[in-house]
Image (cartoon, rainbow, N blue to C red; front, side, top):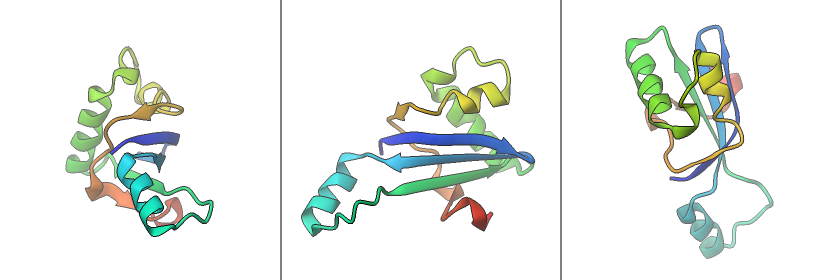
Length: 102
């Protein structure tokens, strides 16, 4: 899935990533069903870094992205995602409906 990262930040040990689904599959779904209400499909992930599985998931995801190369801190790595179109998305296990949910 291709995503366009709109915002990414860290708050109280939780890494949040908000992105727009800009994949071909989503475009074909919208075209096929004529479902175009002007809304973009926004996806949100939350990784609680105090949880070991979530920590290793976000760590491996950030290390795999070329835009995070050279980042010295977690904040630098996470903020470098913003504004980039990435060919992969984070693990669906940590997807949430909205930031208010977490």
